[in-house]
Length: 260
Length: 251
Image 1: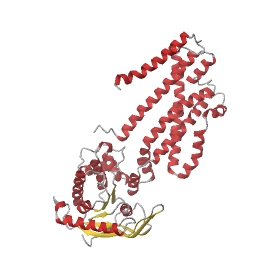
Image 2: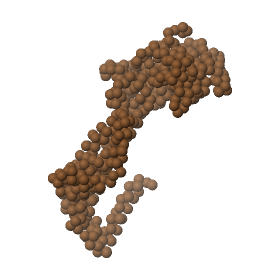
Image 3: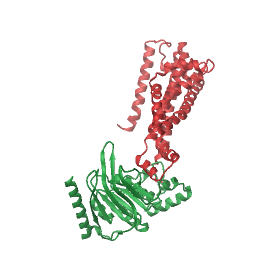
């Protein structure tokens, strides 16, 4: 497959789908409150651009706050678990429970605990709960993925526990930890969306809340516009972290081609 | 070299592993300071186990290990270069000094000197991923040499390299040995390589390894050019091969 075709094919396919959607809406005179045409969604997107940017920022900051909190907590937990098998065993059931419990089921509890005045806290906490497991297990897998011969070398030269941690385990953990963080960041966004939807969103007013609110008023074009914004936000977050991951890994193992 | 000080010794050591059973022994071994001994044996005979005992990395199940070298005076080179990918070549080589508490600047200066001595001047800032297999093994040798060890333990260090690089490194290692004369144990499964490197070739039986016999190689070290074609080299290699064959047959 030549390069222009490889680039053009997916674009063409999406254009075809949108065109079909648009044509179907017009020909069958589908009511807007049931299914808006792409052109109507684009109009709604353009007219509420500022509002959507603000809402996207709120959702993003919720996800990033949760991610930052989990980064610290899961990192510390992984360090503890890597240091002692007993600690790891003690954490395991809780980590698994966090992993298997559907997050929506926890939402009402968190909303009650956060209190009526702070639904934003409940949303952050929900996002943090879903992001915890991948970040914890990525960091733990990384901390345990030490080259056994390097470990022997540290034994041979009588390295202290602290030297072993800072000069061997933590740097060794970088690739696995990044992998876990990538999954965790995506899940933090999912958690923020679920949180906004179930916490009622009074204080949050993020994108998920916009979707819900527009749907309640049967303003489906607006609802779709917020959905498009959410998809773009998720995509941007993924692409952004991908770039960060690539740069970090390149720093970690050095560029194979560039001889500096 | 006969009658020199003992650099390290294994006295009737046995090593049992829970899952594998007996891995080594009973086995006696004596390393005199300044000599090069090659340990040869079929794979699984416990050569690497013997090396770990000599390094003090694990205790024997029975018997005694005698080590004259103090902490930081024993260096180990593994079959893979075992460099930390996130550190530059110089930082990898400086690591043993820094772990022992040396200052960063002096450790780096010594590391750069060690890299120069193994022919890696100019590669100080390169990462392991940027080094060829031979260069990475040279960096690993530099890391072993940087502490100026009394005992060097090499576990099939050239096994993963191509023949030309392997021969070049063998000569370079012998030249480096001639400068400081550390005691060296060189583990290999290649009889020719053992005879080329060592003044004494210790042949082991299949696992659990015991002593099958010993061959002395009477020739100057570093080896003169064309040593591999001399009668002395071929006789020693033949003797070691015979010992190995008998040991394999007896097992």
